[in-house]
Amino acid sequence: MVKAKKKVSKSKISSDNKVELKKIKNKLNQINKKHKALKIKNDDMKDKQIRLLAEFDNYRKRTTTEKERLLNYDGEKIIKSLLSSFDDLERTVLDDYKDSKSIQKGISIIISNIKKILNDHEIKEFLSIGEKFNPELHEALMSELGKDDNIIIKEFEKGYKYKDKIIRHAKVVVSSKS
Image (cartoon, rainbow, N blue to C red):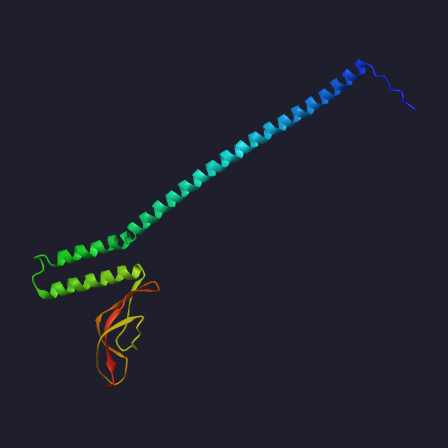
């Protein structure tokens, strides 16, 4: 048996196609709008990323420059404070001071001023004479006979600490029993 084909009119097919075509066009327009919105969003994100990278690069350059400046002029504060003591030394050796007592007095004042400046900058001398020899603090130049071993009996140069760091070892003479 042969089925009878339904006859569909041409106008019905073409109106269905038009409706279908219209739906497809609407979907395509929606997709295009989404695509444009996503493209704009993507471009904005790229722009933000480029700006952020440039900002970070500028920050890195600024901090590098600042670090270099700090390292180059690190001792400026202490040098400025020592200048007045050097001026005092120059005045002490002028012709105004003819006798050695006044020169000694002037120099001892200057030494106390310099010690105060060093102390204000957390640079402190440490005592060595009578102490047990410590290679982290002292540098032994000689040894002499004494009652006990490894006791410091003379100091050629004082040792100094800056905060907790040794900046100069004390140069000392150490005792030895034999």
